[in-house]
Amino acid sequence: MKLTFLSHAAFLVEAEGFKAIIDPYLTGNSLAQHKPEDITGLTHIFVTHGHGDHLGDTIELAKNNDALVIANAEISGYLSKEGVKTHAMHIGGRHKFDFGTVKMTPAHHGSSIPTEDGILYGGNPCGFVIEVNNKKIYHAGDTGLTMDMKLLEVENIDVALIPIGGNFTMDIEDALRAVEFVKPKVAIPMHYDTFPVIKADPKEFKERNKACETVILEIGQSYEF
Ligand code: NI
Ligand code: MN
Image 1 (cartoon, rainbow, N blue to C red):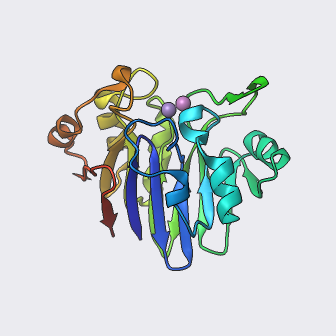
Image 2: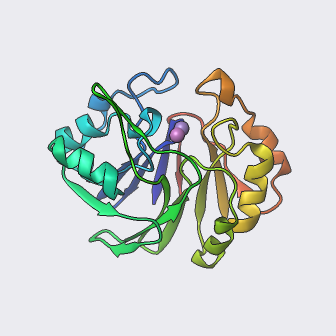
Image 3: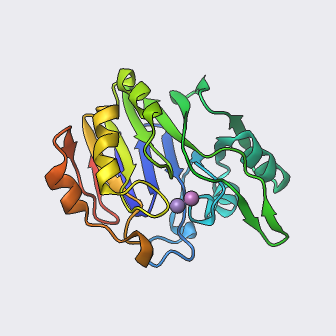
């Protein structure tokens, strides 16, 4: 499996016959090096919640690539009306897709959807455990530290994508406790530096994380496992 960091909470996940993007916030993201039109051959899009920095370019990417969007029922309903192919799931649910399995995990956060006509209800925010070819990644989404993360220990996560930026999500202090709960083989910090209010130093997280290996990805850099 190949994971590429696109900045913020956006990652590409690639395996044979599978090319997914998680939380594709590219347009309006000052750190992003990719434009939506640079991303081709997408088969799936995962959306953790309705906020603009996660829903991002989902509609354009889904339509351009004829990709299937996997999100909670409320976001799926909204996207279906916009003409996008969706697969609705909800918290705690696991489903077997042709590429592997997906489990939707809880996140403590909000999920409203900003639209031209105002704010829409976006259901509950989530994270994802995505298993492809017996490799598992956990994208925590935007979340505070929660005891629920302890339940993920039995999943034997290979790579956990963990927010460290604080203010809207866990900070480094809580992210360190989160990886102790989840016990992944590798943690990759995310959701930092995009806005002044979420400035954080991933090197501090790496130095202090004794629970697992830490891999800091530069924007555009990939990690294969
Ligand atoms: Ni958010
Ligand atoms: Mn966010």
